[in-house]
Length: 283
Ligand code: KIV
Image (cartoon, rainbow, N blue to C red; front, side, top):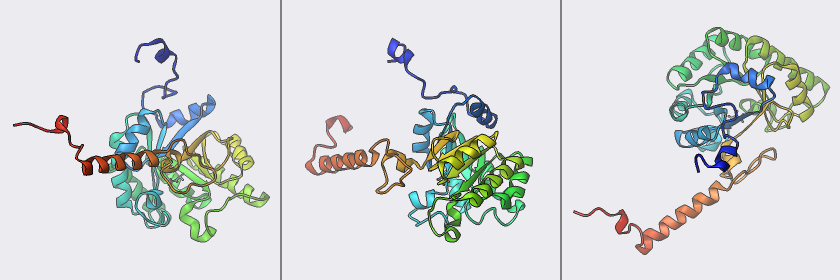
C-alpha cells in the first residue's frame, strides 16, 4: 500500500531514480559499483512493464528475428522492422535508455552506411543509442556515429550476425591469443567512443579482465558475474521460450500463465459463462 511502513521500506524498483537514464549515467553507475539491468524488448506492451520495474536499458535486439518474427537467426532482420519495433518500445518507455540494434548488412560496409541506418533508428524509431557487433573493423563506424551525437554500444564475444563464420553459437575468447584479441577489440571500441560494451558467451575471467580494463560499463550475457551489468532476452528471462541457453535463468513462467489464461477464456466462451451480464450493455 502506498504510504504504508512496509512500502516505505521496500527497495525502489528503480535503483537510481525515476528520472530518465542518460548516457553519462552509465559510467557514473559503473564508478559507483551499481549494476546495470538490461533486457530486450520488441514492443510497447512489454517495454512499459520492464520500464516500470526499473530496467535501466531496453535493447531492441535483432534477436527479434528468432524470438518474434519466426526466423532461424538474426540475419534476415531488416532496418524497417527494427524501426517499427524501436518506435513501439520508445513510445512506451519513460525511464530506460532505449538501445536499438543495427541489423546485419546495415552498417558493416562503411561509416556512412552505419550513419544512415542509425539516423533512421534515432529519428524514426526514437532510440537513444544504437548497438553494433564487432571490434577493430568497426571502430571507424563508432567514431563517426559518436562525432554525430549517436551513442554506440559495442558487442563482442559471440556476435550472432557472424554465426556463419563462427560456426554456431560457441563461447568466444578461449585461449590466450583469442582473449588478447578480444581485449584489444574492447579497448579499441572504448577508445573510438563506445559508451558500453555487451560481452556475449565469453569466459568469466576474460569478461572480468575486460571490465577492469575499461572505464565504460560491460554488460554480460553468458559472461559471468564480473561484468558491470547483465542482459537477457526477455522471453528466456520470463519463461516464454521452450528452450533457453545455459547462461539464462527462468525468473517466471509467463508462458504457462498465458496458456492457462487462454484455456480459461476458451472454456468460458464455449460453456457460455463469458460474456456475463456484467460484460453486457443494455438498451
Ligand atoms: O539482439 C539481442 O538480443 C542481443 C543480446 C543477445 C545482447 O544482441
